[in-house]
Image (cartoon, rainbow, N blue to C red):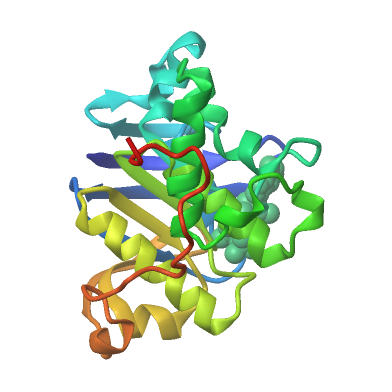
Length: 250
Ligand SMILES: Nc1ncnc2c1ncn2[C@@H]1O[C@H](COP(=O)(O)OP(=O)(O)OP(=O)(O)O)[C@@H](O)[C@H]1O
Ligand SMILES: [Mg+2]
């Protein structure tokens, strides 16, 4: 589903960020991307959703060469990819609701539909009660979770998350990780960049390790502690009631 063939990336100014990267991530896989700060994790992720183009090599996403997609077709690519950015990228002067429903709105979903999607997706991250807040009124961890809700709202084929638990306390970080695993169980391919070796050891799965722009390790890890994550029995973080006017009452 995501294939890199001898991909290199050099930023203008001569800085080499990635060097001769080759891998194949099949549909439905859960992959950790790890490596020290500056190793190239964010750069690699940005290449997948065409925020950057490679300097050399080829990248196929869903069989399509992403570097040659015309500018006008990039939104179609992005529809199928949910992204949680390292720096969140929420719009400060828009409410949580407006932030998370950006894509459905773009796709022409009506207001009622948007409300339903926003509620469902915010509930999964425990923030359905903050629909009308503005991002600056939220804590870093809450903003992180809004960014996750926005990425999940469209049930994307691929979920890319760049240090998604970096701002969360350990409990919340566990919840969010469980959410990603659950999303993966429903068929979404997940690529998660993290420094957190502990989490990786606990959860297991495929781990691609970068060092100064090169893949130095690509291994399948068996988690040491899957029961602690309560993967399949996870009930999600919040038992909030549905909002008024939400369908079902008939
Ligand atoms: N826009 C840019 N212009 C020039 N150089 C860049 C740019 N973005 C990243 N780099 C450089 O590319 C290299 C890889 O950076 P990248 O952000 O991909 O690393 P990272 O693994 O995500 O690091 P971190 O863990 O700190 O987020 C670094 O040397 C960085 O300085
Ligand atoms: Mg990064």
